[in-house]
View (cartoon, rainbow, N blue to C red):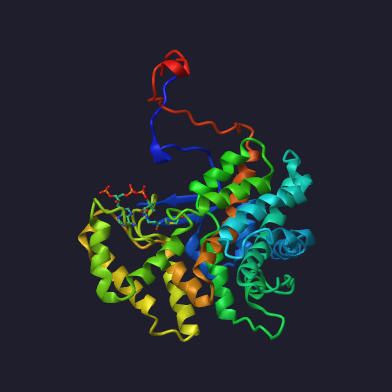
Length: 392
Ligand code: CMC
């Protein structure tokens, strides 16, 4: 009963009210709690951004220190968690490991199940933001067959993450502050993006009152797809497949061909029909990283630069408003930082965790909150009578 509007992909459905993130896709504007992403990325750091998303205001110096202290108290994971990893095949995709391990966290933190308690909600949020890099680094270490590296609480969030990923017991690992800053900026740029597919998934899962770790695991599963967070991995794989600048026209033609399902990965966005403001910052960060590492003549980079140039001047891409998105540049940057492609979406998940949890909290704390329950337009068979198998 009732009338429903058919809205595939929810392109015109406002699923909630939110005070967290504002996007004007036509103007290329992204604000978190009113602050432009450009200013947060330029002057702030990821911890401040987390605080802002969770609490609605930028922290004072004392609040910032306290928040940082509380986050670092939660960076360790239960030692039993390390045994969970060995159940996975060595060649398992790290996102598959993330879905499993983060879901399993709900079995370690029974207290988080009481989502009616504001204190428990906050503790669950802290745990999630603090442990996600540890688990992501463990997934990486497991994948490459190296021992897990424990977190170091004297380091900032991004440096600690690089340490857990790249330190090895047999030699000293020095963190370049420019690269740590780039990692931090990547985290800031991916922290939240209003009601995208994975955030909507977290809200929908959370609307039934499920354990928050299980909700985040649902978000991770959704993020994995190449049309969403998996695009950074897909974009880099595409650059490798193109291989050299002279093959670009062939791929551009394929992208334009209506009968070819091929798309240029890292181009286009559901909401940004102007330049993605995050892509601009990511492009700058990408060049800083390449410069710091002295990477000049990477063939993938040549392909990326030429592809970007063609796409920005080609009629098809202009008409369809297909600009390079954040994933186009983040893939190249993460590769330069030393991450294998299958870790790219995992890093996106680490950064987006705060957005997911802030949106989850906002939903739980909204007194009008109801279980999410979309309806459908039924197009199947009308009512009919059962026919015995011998008469079919
Ligand atoms: N290459 C070639 N053509 C494209 C592309 C592309 N990357 N993206 C869209 N189009 C065309 C599409 O064929 C369609 O043409 P027509 O109007 O003739 O049918 C038109 O542009 C509109 O496409 P759409 O699929 O209706 O647009 P959408 O808003 O549903 O999709 C998108 C947005 C991001 C899924 C899509 O642009 C895409 O698949 N891009 C490649 C994957 C990617 O980079 N995803 C990361 C998005 S940003 C990070 C995130 O939010 O997770």
